[in-house]
Image 1 (cartoon, rainbow, N blue to C red):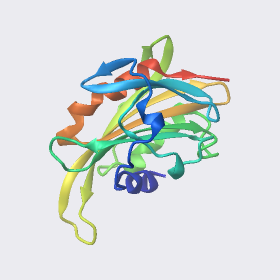
Image 2: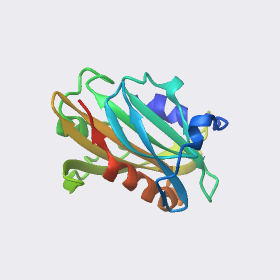
Image 3: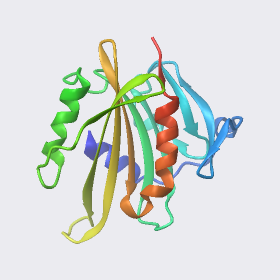
Length: 188
């Protein structure tokens, strides 16, 4: 799953479509935010209007991916993905158990610090990791990627909201991720 999402981030940003011009509800860190609703994956949230929605890369019944522009450092694209579990990966039905698997992909084999926060009346599990990104076909470090996760338990599963950005650009898009998490509403 992580490889597919990382490969997704390497895609070029799609041109804007009419849906990208939806009415702006607020501006977060200079990014216009719109109301987004996924009827198939059963959630709604604020979403960055000018970031590309990559529905063709993910089954819309499993979630959505918003791909942003390259950040100020120009190292790589930022994205925010929202996935519904167990629909995305049937072996994961418990948010905490899912979070506890992340030591397996940590470069230092370290379990991330998992915290519980109340955000917008929802109990949310939060953690982050930093992982190196090497140039293809070499072991030369190109940049470090920061991943932030918010896991929102629901009946029969959970939603994972992930923010990925190069460390050098992380601060520029983190407020957008926080706005998505704060506004997230699971449906039925």
